[in-house]
Length: 352
Ligand SMILES: NC(=O)c1ccc[n+]([C@@H]2O[C@H](COP(=O)([O-])OP(=O)(O)OC[C@H]3O[C@@H](n4cnc5c(N)ncnc54)[C@H](OP(=O)(O)O)[C@@H]3O)[C@@H](O)[C@H]2O)c1
Image (cartoon, rainbow, N blue to C red; front, side):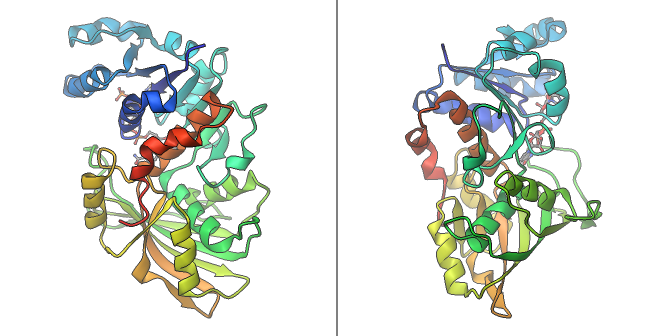
């Protein structure tokens, strides 16, 4: 059986993911990569051509096939056919739950399906390095890769508030997510001034803490976490202010050592989103830092001896890309895949 990975969507997440898989196909043990593009667009022709040049095949809906041909593309598969013949399907659209109902539930071929952050309820929530042990081959055909800020929050909690044996010392975790307005790949939804979000979840504030709670719940935790959100007029990176109150004392030195020991966490002496983003542009995978969080080490402080406070930045597509990749390899290589990830470890920075 050939290992075929199919990606649905070529937006902010889909485009770099197809490229990442294309460029490391052999190392990842993937035989074929296909992707689905919904809308034929002249201004996106170059993107599609380049993804195909790098080795992926195009799938389109039957009723748009001739429009894609008019643009000069040569589609190879019809949308449903591409799903049915795939080993793993990675949905990178804001319509994962809709597609699950429409295409995935009835598709017998694929071993697994992934959807992204917005698709709450698609399947078991997953983030690399947080709940790998909770994945179950018998029951987890559908996984939701949690959002970028959920990766960040969860990574902080696991690193700073939990022991190696899994004991949680968290008494209260609070997070202020300062979101970038839109991605540099997007024209719409820019925010002209700081715009605050509503606490629409009575237990967790916003979906960021709720999703982190759900992620840890897959391992039996019931964590006391709360998040708030404000959107800022920048296109660079999300930033998060965090406060973790523990049931024991902690020092800045211990917190720093714990962060340093986690290979999925980057520390930085930079203090602005633009300098960190720029580092990613020069040293990341096509600009992406694949670490789960970039912690501004000089902002770490301890209050009342048991509350650790600081700021960090969220590599907004990098951490979701890494988890999408590892979940895909988990389906494809049941005997293990850690060494296959070596190909992209250079983009998991420990210092930025
Ligand atoms: N942006 C981020 O930094 C980020 C980070 C982590 C997770 N995520 C998650 O990733 C997912 C996608 O977000 P995004 O930012 O990548 O979105 P995006 O840039 O707006 O791209 C969406 C893509 O999905 C396609 N699409 C939309 N509806 C579709 C449908 N019903 N059927 C087939 N294709 C459809 C669009 O195709 P056409 O343009 O061809 O119509 C486009 O290629 C969301 O769940 C989001 O929460 C995003």
